[in-house]
Image 1 (tube, rainbow, N blue to C red):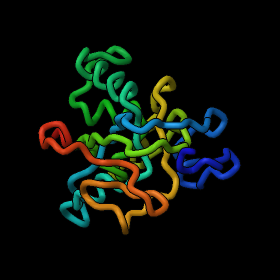
Image 2: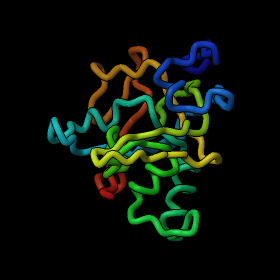
Image 3: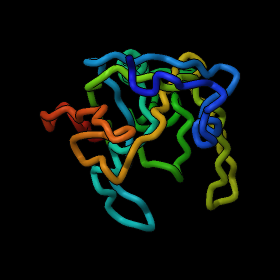
Image 4: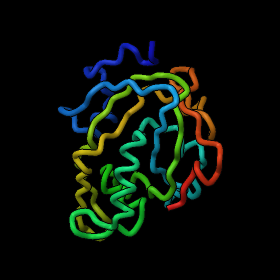
Length: 183
């Protein structure tokens, strides 16, 4: 039986509801051995360097096929008729990540240690007010689905394992050049 076996759409946490298009959220079972990815931030403007555990101990991830879809757009150099300047910006655009939330300057790759049910859906449109008074709309790509893993235990996670409900669920890829890809 997968972890979060009784997960229900009605139990969608507020932070997941604010990041996913609610009407398109589904429950998905990720399988042991599957790879997942996430864009993270190595630096916070007010707090300085971000510890690696904060890069990994997050409920927000994408499956491998979604990562490759985003990376292909970046490598192809086109989306909506213009090239993206970095993989991080491409991920920000595809996943509707506000600049104030993350620099998206590093990609983390992990594999699942056990089956787990998660929430899955496209990113919800986000609006961000910039210091210059402009408002930026981050729409996300409708065909890119994000996953939200409920009950990530940041206090028990570390830079190599993500813990959910007291159990190790994600192992961060060990080879440095494959784990963290600077953007």
